[in-house]
Amino acid sequence: MATYVLVPGACHGGWWYDPIAAELRAAGHTVHAVTLSGLGPQESAAGINLDTHIDDVVRLLESEDLREVVLCGHSYAGMVITGAADRAPERIATLLHVDAFAPEDGESVWSLTSGFWHDWYAGGAGEDGFAFAPLPVLDERAVPHPLATITQQIRLTGAHRRVPRREYVYCAAFENSPLTATYERLKDDPTWHVRALPIGHNIVREAFDDFRKILLDAA
Image (cartoon, rainbow, N blue to C red; front, side, top):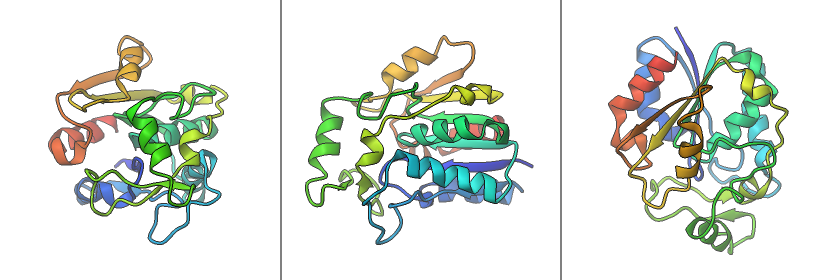
């Protein structure tokens, strides 16, 4: 049986994975669906940056002594799982980026986006300066997301490349996607296994069966 650590995108908690996590657990797999710091009920975003979120995942891997993990990140969480893999590559069997950022050293979500996305991140943080509000199209349970996680540059040693298998799923019908450039960069890279689905960004809602198969195949 496999061990999965599932990390959600901006403004979401581990609950975003609940339907797929339930099916994986029913099949006998171990699943940890992570709610990152500052994204739980009534949590403050003050003082939380990308390193905080990377630490959240590394702490889980180490405290539970998880090994041969399928580490999956959606959207923003591609930053987090890349950082966690760079710090603990020996614990991870597969890195699964689901319509997610796959950064190089020194990049940030801010540096990898522009236009509409900058307007959302910066403009949405006006209330307290620490977190940007979720977009109206997101799940009703979505919460404000710590702005510093978007602006902080990731620091990578290159150790994440030692993970035996790296997979990328591109959601090709995501309007105004900030991830097209990532897909174009990785699709012909022999160190990645890349596929595209004709869906929008919310793979749980739009392609549940495909996502379940991708997760099972990743193990």
